[in-house]
Image (tube, rainbow, N blue to C red; front, side, top):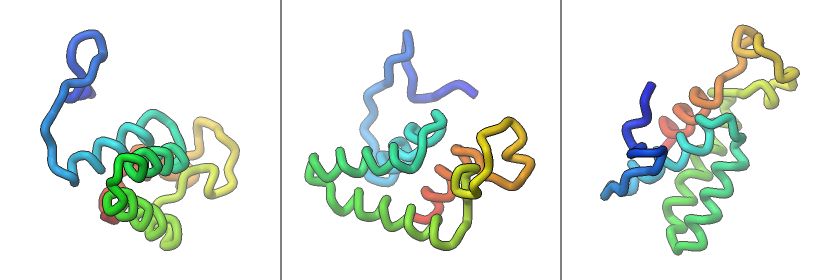
Length: 105
């Protein structure tokens, strides 16, 4: 699926968005590229640095709820080896994890 936010030569378009859209973009960008929750945490640290503590707190709370309730668990959280069949074993993809975190907001 084409990324609607990418412009020519892979550059991102500049958009004016609300807080919810910023959160969604940060989480999906971090997790849909096979990065871990730690990458989302680094985005939270960036938000803290920019003075957006409320936004970063909301994201961290959503991560905590998803992880503690086990709503979505990636292969490493399930202690599975990183093999092509992990999704068939019940592990969430990184996109599914991103969606669960966003739903937890």
